[in-house]
Length: 196
Image 1: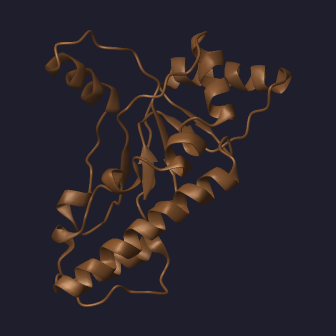
Image 2: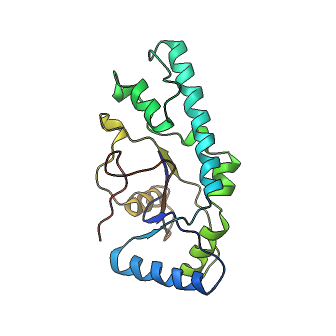
């Protein structure tokens, strides 16, 4: 599960200091030379935990309703959130939900604490020379190994967002995208892979 908008992989806490300036320069250099940068512990653990709790509650509501409707056999209580959906939909992975945007889009945990985090906004301002503006579009996805609909091939978020502006007949905007996992990720469960 992750809240996503793309090529700045978030995870590092940056303070308002000389070290923050050095961090911004490192990130700027990596973005220019590689096209991505990894920032470990940028978002406070409390913000990530709050967003995770909101998402867990949405998953619980969904699975409870899916059991009641007969769509799945069990809500798999007691398993970690990232395992519950995979286990609950093991017999029909193609029917598992792939997006949780509608369930979390209006929450303070996502809109204020995660997307508008002071350290994240300070880093964006340091990189762009302008105050951070949070886009109205974001993704909150569950990626399941055995579900074609819940897997995403190699792609570039910027091309998608550029096309959205063109389709709306608006001038495309430049954006700095961020990807923040809400669960531990790695090769075993589909962590993001970045290529220069």
